[in-house]
Every structure is written in structure tokens, then in C-alpha cells.
Image 1: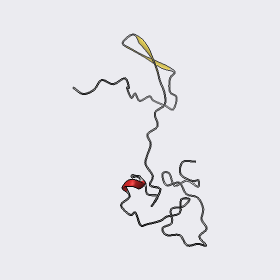
Image 2 (image 1 turned 180 degrees about the horizontal axis):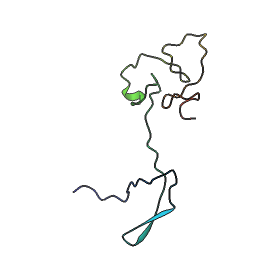
Image 3 (image 1 turned 90 degrees about the vertical axis):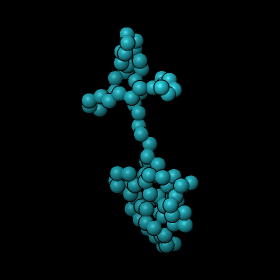
Length: 90
């Protein structure tokens, strides 16, 4: 056996999260869990942080992800997670 935990992850059908659930005769408060995905602040690839960047010499635009953007670079914001027209995390 490992360490004791006070956290349980439950999955609910639909998009509503109940205020509480009853387990073993006790009410337990529910909170929404959002998994975080690391985005590198050096190369702006998804899946690693800047401290573990496989391309530490690479620079990229923080808004669109273009590699080694020039001084006259203009872009349209692009989310690195969903590819929507917004900056990642906005």
C-alpha cells in the first residue's frame, strides 16, 4: 500500500459538477478538476517546460509559434492547445 490520500477523482455525465456527493454516509464537496498541460516558454511546444526543452537554442513567437521570427514578424494569435484564434492560456 502507498500513502493515504484525501482526494478522489470522479467522472460525471454532462458538464455540470454537483455541489457534493455522498460516500460512505458522508457528504463530500466536489470541485472541478482541470488537468494542466505544460507549454514550453522557449520553443512553445506542448508537453514539456522550459527547463526540459529539447531545443533550448530555438526561439519562437509566443503568440503564433513561428520558429525564429524576424524583427518585422507579424502574426495572428494561435492557441498551442486547441489551435483557436487566441493566445494560449487566454
